[in-house]
Image (cartoon, rainbow, N blue to C red; front, side, top):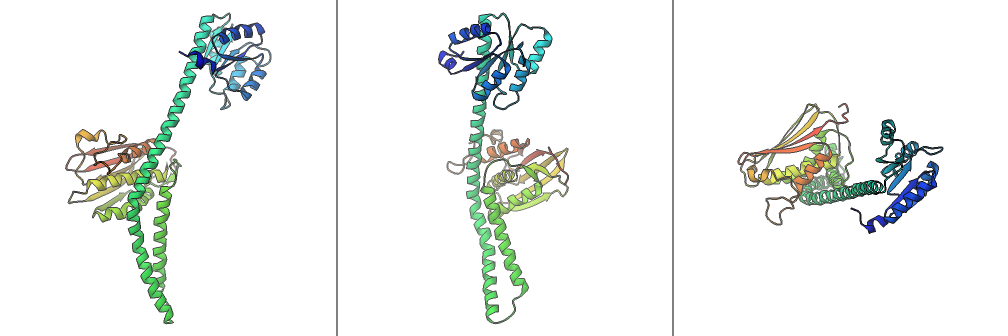
Length: 381
């Protein structure tokens, strides 16, 4: 139930060509505490709503010039007015008129002559429904913002983990370039013509460093889902580029089985790389105390769906926690070792792509994470 303070914050518009109806309706609604404005025709109504916000409109059907049906249809087109609930005031109660009223965008109708209690109940009901809709929209927006913050937090954590491995990955080609540059310098000093292979090696190492750093920067930028047509295998390879050195440092063997016949898919590449890095890092941690350290990444396409499988030879996931691993902030790690966001964020990103992520695991026999991405808006490979 709306209280008096809430009612005084709400503005209602009465649209009727008969002044006695406006006066009667206005007095009833103002007694309840509502703020009321009025218009005597459809044109004036459209002018009003363009200059002021209204929470509900009481709209007469039979008016000279533009009738109520046309006014309602016009109000339901602009973004600014389409969500305003409209209750028709009418003496026409035949089924055809009632159906036409709902089809034009009305939410309810009140018959003339109207009953005061019925009027107030219907008005309050639709005001409450509209307020609840607005609250839900705000809650949904806050939820999206919270999700975005979680994604950003998890991404920053991922970048922190990747940074060390990327630094090592860059140091290697930098060392090679330094050696080749010193040799090239000596060659030029001695007046000799440098070998083409020396210059090619330096160029190759520069390109590799550039690719790694550029991709790390790209990975760290933004959190919005900008979907473009991409090959999943390219996304897998880019994710491996960022995490491969870290995995190799732990003496983990990575094997890939990437299908050559995948269709392109509409996807946010950086976000999906984030998912893959989370899953790969999850597998890497599962292998820390295992002798045989292997990860296999597999891609294939079946039934208009792209599949990505990440299988590890780790210790598996126990039955008492496997149903909770995608919950936000759930973690089996020691305090300070993780936020419990990686898998939850990954689940959310895959859902944003209308996909699904699930896990099969058996203690002592490893785990398989599978991402399923439907080929919506599929293009030719």
